[in-house]
Image 1 (cartoon, rainbow, N blue to C red):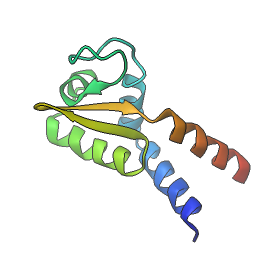
Image 2 (cartoon, rainbow, N blue to C red):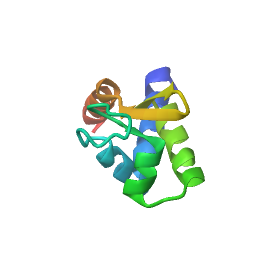
Image 3 (cartoon, helix red, strand yellow):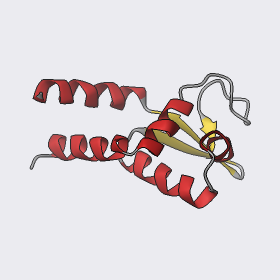
Length: 99
């Protein structure tokens, strides 16, 4: 299996879970971040929106981050996440080409 196929498989695994899709939907919101960012959310904001405990959110965020679907940045004590729209668009193109 080539690198591109593995990336697509990882992407599909990441978005297959309904909770992770809810997280991705929450990350589309503008201006909802506690860190006063225009886009993205901190981990606490995600916990609030999807109504899950911190360890569960961390688990899901690791999977999304490993797949490249989200980008994470540490700011002080906070971890701030945003969607990686470039990767999402690329993976959607690859999927469409295969179907």
